[in-house]
Length: 500
Image 1 (cartoon, rainbow, N blue to C red):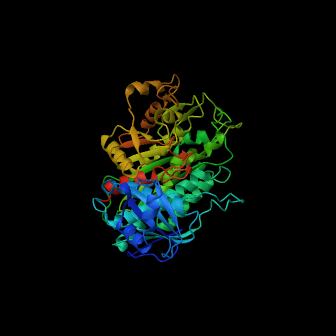
Image 2: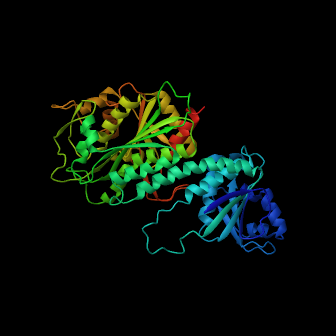
Image 3: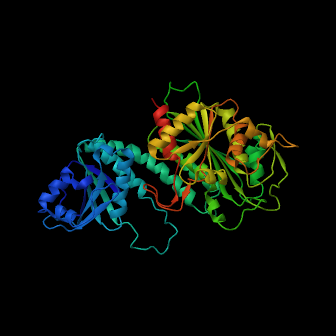
């Protein structure tokens, strides 16, 4: 689907979209189209239950005298309540309703609405962004596609005053959508296609956008002393990788004395649980246990694509957690890159071992301004927050505030949970510096407490995305499957706080 922008005009063919506000108030474009069709819109409204409520719509087929194949009346609700998120949802609704049935071009007429704080160019750009996000499909492995479900829409055209401004705004947002789509693609791939080596190859492709990419193999990680990460990988035939991505966007002479921004992702490309084997039911979903790494790679694509004015490092630890004769055992003791020892009580608590070495490596090598890690880390996170929010853990109030504000702005909300010495005591081991699990109570918190031991004095936040990396139902901007949750949140955090 191609998205374009043009000046306000009355479309003469294909399909048109006009807005209806609450209580069946026609927008200016809807009024003009109603007059051109001899009152077809008014008659349709009177014959229906549609009132202009936000999220509702009404289709009129081939109104006489218009030359149009159909007109879609888009409910916007109250003009004063229209904001960025509602405009995006409206654009997604247009795509969802018309893409499967409307061939050619759909023209969306965007007006200056009394009482609305957004001008037409802003509304058009955000609607286009919403349509783009909702248009995602992962169907590469379907050999028998249902033609009735396949989108046929060729072009989605937004007609408004200030169309050049709308185009420029959308072009930036589209780069973020590209990052979201990359993350969704990576999370959706099956584990026989996506494993540490091929996921590292996917990250390497970012060099085309100016991202510097380094890939460390098992030999290099062994020399660095990454015993925690390597212990997870030792049961698999697939060798692990550590991928380091650099985006130097601040420009010469603008390097921050505080160091780069750093994002670290857990990349377990398939998690059987290892010797602590998971139940068979639902294990196929463990292909997305690399969701944190997918978000970091997608974020780097978004930042590079829109040429973010910040220096950013992305690091992902990539392993496969498999049971075999060489696999790590419960009771084993591993030595992390930090020198701290870990008694492995449960081999299914492997993601924190991967992150432990990745975080320490990041801290020691880059001396970053802060580190934010992302991981599908604990089932306890889903029990606590369901599939509506990610959990964040940080001792830094500023990071917490920035993440919360960015999440609210892009509708990827987070919820801050506590840390503290009382939780930390649950990790005490009799034979090593710590255990890798603290028991069932407060499982997400004790996991975060484990990670905290590997960040030193660097400001740090942990985001547990276990409940939001994958969805079994459609949402406004997200079809079911890999969500890409976190890319827009972190992109917004960087844009709002570190590019000024």
